[in-house]
Amino acid sequence: MVTINKTLEPLQVQEPTHFHRIEKTYQNNQDSDYTEKIQELGHEFNYAKNSNCYWSKPDLSLLYGTPLYDAASDTQKLALNHLYWVGNYNHTAVSEASTSIYNMVTSGVFRAVGGYETLCDELDFETDQESHHIRAFQKIGYKSKMAIVGKTILGNSLYSKTEKDNNWLSLLIPQPVRDYFTSSQGSSPFSIQRDNTLSAIAKTMLSDKKQYYSQYLRNLEEKGQPIPAPADGLAGRIAPRYWLRFFTVHWGMSPFMACQYYSLRYTANAILKNQEYPYVRYYRELEQKGEYIPTPTAVSYYHLLDEAFHTTISQTIARDMYKDFPKPTAYEKFISGLIVYQIQRNLLSGLSGVLPGRCVYDDEMLMLFYYKLLKSPLFNMETKEALNWMEKCFCQEHEGFQTGLKYHQSLLELMRRLFSRLDYQWSVNRDMGIMAAGASIEKAIQNNIPVFKEFSKSVLAQDS
Image (cartoon, rainbow, N blue to C red):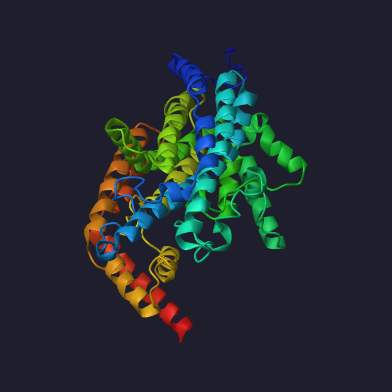
């Protein structure tokens, strides 16, 4: 690895243990790359051959622990287990697409600084891996969903904010990942002026770092293309797209902020690990017993093996590498704190009793998904029957909330493991105060009651 560019003053280079960690991680990731295996499994997947067995322990199922789950048939319970995998990995695919974009944004900064060539090679390698992961997830998800419910709820994601943004077919296919994130740009004079103004503010506040502006963003600007901002996935929940573009300028201009982005990427890694590791345990149990391993379970297993290296990189950059650079300015600290605060508030502020692992309160879009699920051929319910069951699931205490709380506490521990060590962060972010306060079944139910009442009212009004 070459010497770090000395033009960035004052440069505080510590004992470069993280350089060795990055080099080792890059080499290990290449040596044990499971991308081809995941590709093969995705290409050969046949739902009929995997339809009669669970893909994980039952607790990773839609509606697990609810009164409706208890009343469901064995066939329905299998389908709910499979649909959980589909929804989770549809969401993961979108999140990994945004990761690919931000890998390119931040590596442009690290290349401009100099001395981080191995890291940039690792980020490029990860981006290539993600593209293959995404295709496998989409193939398995689409085939499974069509077999279980057909086109009934094809346009709704478990995590959606708008149906338009979450068509299970259109996300990433056939569009390249890059086109997906640089399209759907607001074109009104106001939105263009707003984006230009926010970008100008960011560049002005970081003007002493303009020499590190990411070549990836420079290229987009030269082509007249907008700064990327995902509409969905984890990043899409954090803030409106114009604020994400504003944050992206920071991640693509300041070496410190480029490192700070990886605390956000670590959040995505931690959320995935929290829900994916149970699949790995299940895979190992089946393997030890010599039993059939469902293809989606195997995909989860191999994916976590690849993602472990990505997580190590996120931790290393977010926790250690930022110390290579001058201490953040008051402005950089403020933006960094604001971003993580938004992550807590919009992504980690509650828990769900109907979707294990979801650490945010249930909203109308999630209720719409379940309503359409209950109306689908899987349950074939009439409107009033569906709403009655939904009220029991969303608005009354049951085992599903306990399951949600278990996953919430596990994720909270993972989050604190990193953020407690970031000395520049606000105290509420270091101890994940907002997330911790959301670990309440009572709060979750009290939040759901008025939301469900409004949802039920709108459904009945449309039916009348």
